[in-house]
Length: 130
Image (cartoon, rainbow, N blue to C red; front, side, top):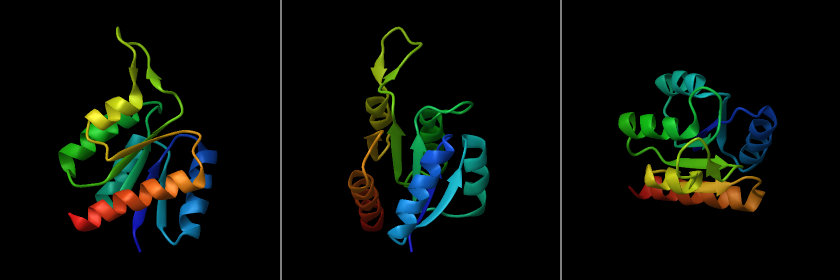
């Protein structure tokens, strides 16, 4: 059974994703921030990481950078409700930036069950082929 690590600071989002993914027979582990996620990654291999782009502390794009350095083949899906990264001179779509930083997929919140499951299946299929 594939096991997914979901990293999101919103407890409601984490709970909803866990319920949906477990109903499709995926194993799911939840993390509320990057620090917790990396502690969990030290103790277990995951088949997929799903990470929110905007979180306090270490944001999702930073997590993607670190994951690519330590686990380059780990499939990653970046999720974002907000499309634009602010605070820079040139506003950029955070999901486009995630793709540039090697995220395998990105999905904009709010997303439906079908979109989420298609993204998961696509990433896991790619991981199995490589």
